[in-house]
Length: 285
Ligand SMILES: Cc1cc2nc3c(=O)[nH]c(=O)nc-3n(C[C@H](O)[C@H](O)[C@H](O)COP(=O)(O)O)c2cc1C
Image (cartoon, rainbow, N blue to C red; front, side):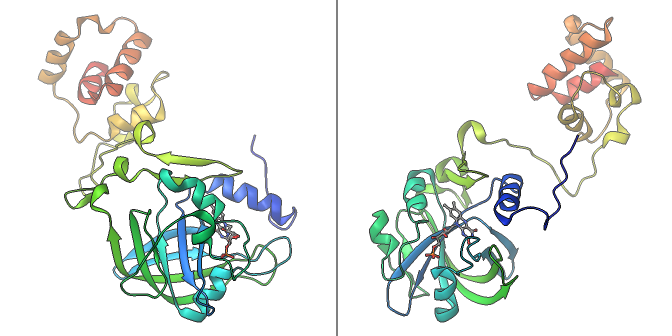
């Protein structure tokens, strides 16, 4: 059974919750801007992502408030100044980020209210957040208005001028997710921490064509035991084992339960989870 949600037949508030609960977890742009009054504004935006690497383009959306249809300081500031810094949010500043989402008046700086530190930017006037390990200094290329009513977004399209990355989150030329320890936003008041046991590594070449589900023998593909993920791990292999490999593998696992199909498939599932999908496939054939 699936519940049908038809936009326009429920309140914007309820629709918003279905959307943010479904499109999750979302990365968080912690956006610093400067008002024409010189005040340094800081606010989190999770309707956010990267959309192009060449040119490097980020987009976040500043929505009209559903309650009173007003627009936000960040939108006003980027319209006036044409620039911003997108700071990433590690777990170490998640509470300060949340505090910055409070609707402080435009003459109050969220840097001061949250205790975060201004760090001078190199290509824009608004400061970076020092405690954020990655700062993306941006020029605003375009602002697209999506509607006039409460909840309507304004897409703020930014080109990245410069990325400042703390050496502490790098291993060689790559960012290490465990060192970066980012948080993402889900529905309701939930966040997720993208490090440790939450990380899953799935190597997958996109240029080499694997077996795919249709390349698996039918008795494997129609298994009553193996899950979609387990079958997909086998389907990601590049070739079926030959007769020698099958015989060799079966000799290596005399305890695999060749007589009982279910037991054999459970055994194969265990091997898949132990990172031995070739052995699992050989046993199943
Ligand atoms: C994690 C998080 C993500 C948010 N994402 C958005 C968003 O994508 N768009 C938006 O309009 N407001 C979003 N908000 C709410 C704004 O941060 C909030 O309205 C803030 O007061 C805006 O500040 P400003 O007026 O200084 O721009 C989010 C709040 C939090 C805590």
